[in-house]
Amino acid sequence: MTLWVTIYVFMGKRVDLKAQQVVLESLNISDLSQVHALLSYILRFAITVQGIGAFLLAWAWVPEHGWGLGLYHAVFHSVSAFCNAGFDLFGESLVGYQDHPLVVLTITALIVIGGLGFIVCRDLLAYPKNHQLLWHSKIVLSATGLLLLGGTLLFAWTEHGTGLLDRHPAGIRWMNYLFLAVTPRTAGYSTIDYTHLSHAGILLTLILMFIGASSGSTGGGLKTTTVVVLIVQAFSGVRSRGAMIFKRGISREAMVKAVFMFTAGMLLISLASFILLSTEQIPAGFGLEYILMEVVSCFSTVGLSLGLSANLTAIGKVVLIVMMLIGRIGLLTVFWAINLRRTPSKVKHPLGNLMIG
Image (cartoon, rainbow, N blue to C red; front, top):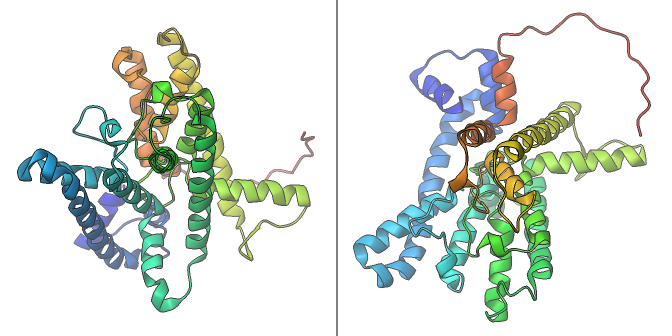
């Protein structure tokens, strides 16, 4: 919808207020007049970052595949990583390059940059001149840093001694632990066979996939800012004080959106998982994680799998297609699209007391 409204803006067409609200939310801007400048920046930034990524990957793949195929692989995987698409041309993702620092670290950087969001990246580039960051950027960068650091340390703990990466030197192991923390949010590339991941590692992957990238980025998922708002609101409720982040309060509207996205996301995942548990066969040696991995991966548009994708029934395919569409469009956009023509009720009802907990 943002794309179509953007085309309308460039053509000078009028856009109704509710459609404008969807665009402003998806691009994280306050005025539709900013669309021209923002899209120009996004285009230049995306081409530059993907060009640098392709150049670095070419250093690894041109000597291996020759100029033609090497450059093609470099450009393709640079675009795929930056856009958090996860498509590869090797058939086994990046498993064959798990001990290649240039490939793994370049893909890692592209995924992280794409997952931060264009607004945050623009803010970071302007920091040397302005010496300040937007409130939104501070939250996104803090949450991303904690997830990357915490995820890397937790994967090092869960996968140490399992034989997954033990044959590699310490530096290569830590590089892959970092990649395990990065790729579920929400790129879908892999340097290991996920069927060999520990149960704790799979659970951690599911959590990271559900959280996803950040608002206004190329990634999917619930979004880091949504999770931050939920956590801060929960702790502020326990302390009986207003929700504050970096000395600023969180609006009630933001809290309502965060609760809605979390609740709707959990309900969708639960419903899809229930249907797939009824229609799909779980191979020996696997359990509930076999289904959950597929459902959460589709909801967050990640692309990681334990092998169910190739064996889906017709019903399973339809369910996951719907999950991917909703996940890519966004829960809030779907909700607003359903309610575009509804007028708010003018009737106010009395409040009731309800026991909680």
